[in-house]
Length: 509
Image 1 (cartoon, rainbow, N blue to C red):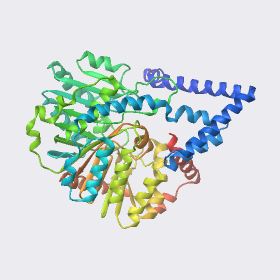
Image 2 (spheres, one colour; image 1 turned 180 degrees about the vertical axis):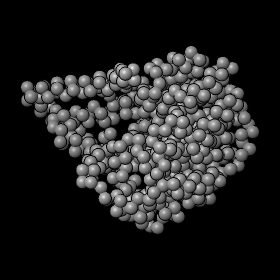
Image 3 (cartoon, rainbow, N blue to C red; image 1 turned 45 degrees about the horizontal axis):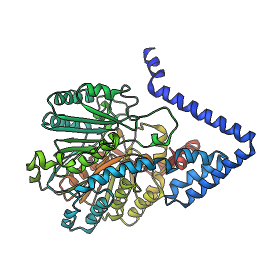
Image 4 (cartoon, one colour; image 1 turned 135 degrees about the horizontal axis):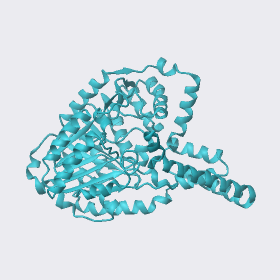
């Protein structure tokens, strides 16, 4: 009974009820006004027509525009109002300017992308140049990389590195949940804060709305941990709630860093089993390459707190000049943001697919992608590239899994090999290609990651870690079942209809 009451009166449930009530009230008022006043009705229709042509003229992927155009035409006269409220970009102009100011301040540290000239492979050189040109984050050498193939391995290594911290610890995570994993990390953070280290934490409010108490940042500050919340959620109908901080970053003393798919909750280390075995990955950086992760963290920190700091005080060489002894290839950590005009995460994936010669292997928990990305995968397979994709067999969200499976047929028809991870849920976001490059990060193959969220990843090339990632993919594939056209098409008619409808409107979700 206590569990039921806590669920009913939880922050999430109260928020949902308030938002539903707002939507209902707004809809009722708009309909009543429209029915009573022909002038108001005509105004709504005019807004719909204007939004229709604004959307048609926008330089966007057609698969993203089409659902909105359909909604505007079907839901007359409210379709244009809905688009204006939930998608029209005018409402994020101030945020874009604030984010741009932070990035411009840090660009003072930039000295070009000189190491890209060391890449003899023109495809790798062009990928590095693309990343620098759109993010300002340059290719780094003198970095040791270590692939973390499971959450359990990541947790063990992270705890050890946190305990060795001497100067500062910066962490940024989408989900944090009280339990075995986070409680152990928190004890170390509290101890380090008590020792006088600069300990900072960013967490996303919606990501933690069901996993942390309200105003948990105050609790953390009482321990000496500087904490702030990204895009604090309020029960008000607003487009701003779409933009979440989905990044996972740890920076320790400027020369050790982590990123990948892992949040700080017990299912990620299989202490709590909710969807079978949870397969997730991360990458550990040691050396110069950590600077990019540091810059990404500081971008978000300064944006939230409206501050400006001297980043040069935290760079790797400040505390650890020996970090530059490593020579294991190159890394280029990068960020993606809804506050610019680049879908960096998607374009990194596209570059890897389009430039692949022998193989490109991918892991993603979701597959809700544009026609452009789908076509790139199909074209690569048709020109003889070995294209393989692993998705979960056990779904965490049934409706998302339906859409994921709806994309299988055209991929398989083109020659893409699709597998489902049978032991449970695969949450890793990994691309590896031709034994020469790989990226590990937070970016799912879905619209939320590719369009709406703050994301990050680490692109690596000419490092032994690329082969390690390839080998882990093959091991994971051997635990997965290959999907066939017969299996994909052998589903009940209602499910096929549901797949088509949800897939069409997926960009709105």
